[in-house]
Structure formats: C-alpha cells, structure tokens
Length: 148
Image (cartoon, rainbow, N blue to C red; front, top):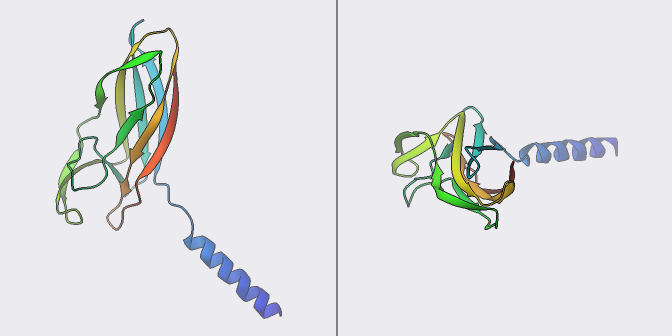
C-alpha cells in the first residue's frame, strides 16, 4: 500500500510539472497627458529571454500579429492607429516568410483625444509568443488604463 501511495504521488507530481502554463510575456500599462486635449496610452511587453512577440504590422499568412481592440467609451476618441518601434525582421522557416518581432521589451503606443478631463481606456490586446522551438497559442489580455 505504501508503494502504491508513493507511485501515485510521483505520477501526480510529474503530470503537474508538464501541465504548467508558460507565460513568457508580462504586460504593463500607463498613460500620460500631452496637453488638456490629448494623451498617449502605453502598453509595455516584458518578454522572457529567448521569446518574442510579433509586430502590429505582420503580414497575413504568418504568425498572429499583436493587436489592440479598444472599447468605445464616451470620454475619448482614438487618434490614428497604435504605433511601435522598429522591429527585428528576418526569415522564419516555420512560417516560410520574413516576420517582424520584438525581443526583451517593447512599448506600443496609442494616441487619444480627450473629451473629458479623466477617462478610463478599456479593451483587449491580442498577441502570440514564440521561441526557436515553439509558438504558444494566441492570447487575449483585457486592459483597463486610467488617464488622469
């Protein structure tokens, strides 16, 4: 009986070790007013070593590009599209095409027009993380960013 309990315990430990969810990207948010009528919302991805996330401008047929969906709110209006720094671009065999991505950290920005003095920007971001061995399924992350 004792051997059976030890065997069951070892099997459970082994299964739980393989079942851990990988989270190679951590997101943080901030906002800064430019003036009384405009602000910039920042989305910072901190990416574990060896992993990367893809550009906002990835081509169709490749990896899932990073994207932002903003909830319509009465206190602000989007000005243009989200922007990004210059990505790394190279050919990836797994996709059979040139892809653009970011490693370590990246800060995406979205300019907004303020209709009220304080607003809360809400929405969802989608991204996909890959390393040189695998890609994780695309993930949606909800965000809530106060602009004061």
